[in-house]
Image 1 (tube, rainbow, N blue to C red):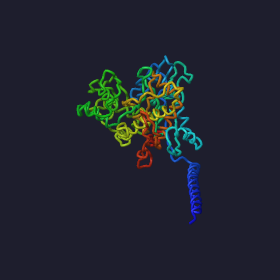
Image 2 (spheres, helix red, strand yellow):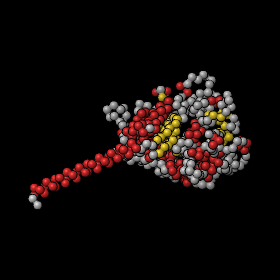
Image 3 (cartoon, rainbow, N blue to C red):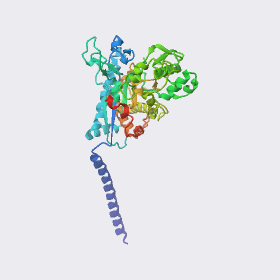
Image 4 (tube, rainbow, N blue to C red):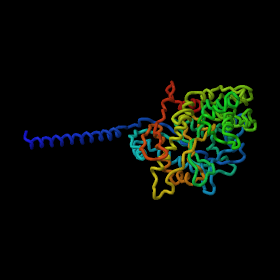
Length: 475
């Protein structure tokens, strides 16, 4: 063959082959674009509740204005917890977390429409190059204002819209729902509780952390230690040993045993953990909530029995009833034990994962020339106790302490940079539902990007554990 003819044929073949490759690439891109445009509906829909903590005021007397209403004694058991504050800096927890919560809801609401999700995807792209399918995340808030936003007279009840537990309307006599019951009524798959700590840290220290509660099996171990049927070492070798200190002069084990008394018997014990302290009654909290696990009407008549679920001491206590069946059930083990963090279940994973998204995302969005602080304070060890929301909702509980009220660095990221903080949380929530492959960067904290297996909470009836939290009569 003539050499010139061979070279000419080879050139033409190369051009045709190259054009074919370009055409194939174009067609693939076109199919991707058309594919998303043809996705007329989200692939999944999820419901979450955003719970900005507190909102009310500490008012006297607690018998009228408190929280944790006890139907046995007919009174509130404790003052309303109005949250952290730093008067010199003009900071209050209830106002800060509400603003973050509003920003978070606004961003999540973008997922309601296909057009809005395109904007939401631009936030995802800050974190990941992964393809992100459309997921609709419906969100509700437990409150949208504070008592300061309303015109209350001095002796009016400023806490009626912000209590944690159910309470009677003294004007009508009707039961009104507290925040826990409001959360359960929404039947969410996830509840994100937003709080600020008050540990009196130095101005440039502090940190963020998860708030969790263990399951029945851990409290049962503590009960056996209290009854001298198990050794303290059995607890102290577990990840739960870093218990919250509510009594500063007691050891962590003594505080943990005290919480087991509150969990089972409703009373604080003495420091030795051998008997209940009748002067420190915390109430039967599972019956302060409107949900399917509340005992039947008239349960109050059985509280003086020496044996049963309302016994005052461990020896007479019997874990019987719908609530205790729930506590021993598999869903509560999945929510509160084991899991991707090694302990704390899906609750701790969801909480820590959202905090990791904050750490990762705030560093990505930093402006080296303008930002006062370039990175947030560290993630602290989880705060562990018999906390209410992690215990008394069926949803996965991501309970977050976003920072320390006295830390200028912490407060910078939840006030001045609240929009960026909300973006981090929103993308983290999306990842909990779908999963994301995070872009690799050098940082102390990188999210795992693993979705929670929500399907494992679906029962034989086809309903999820989250949907079964209230019965038909509760709705």
